[in-house]
Length: 129
Image (cartoon, rainbow, N blue to C red; front, side, top):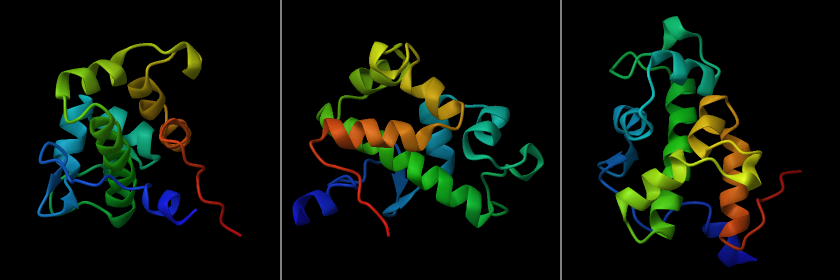
């Protein structure tokens, strides 16, 4: 159980998503090829509040950190291969209702994608009581 507890974050913080050990909002948005509207829908933050610079809200930073973590976990699965990881995120998946993981995240279903990724990694999402 303790090993599953620590497997909710990637072992390595890839430069394509992180800077100085922290999720980089701009890199995350670029990685998923999201526009401002996509970011607003994915995170539930109003479009007018979507800023990826010093004006970023803590709520938006937290959501994008969760999304960057999902991307990093999948990147880790593919041994750092950006092409395979990008293909996985953009290919429709019958196990995800014939949506791509990118589409699911864009529709605000990033927690559902995280559950699928955690299950694929052989771990149960931690229960909070």
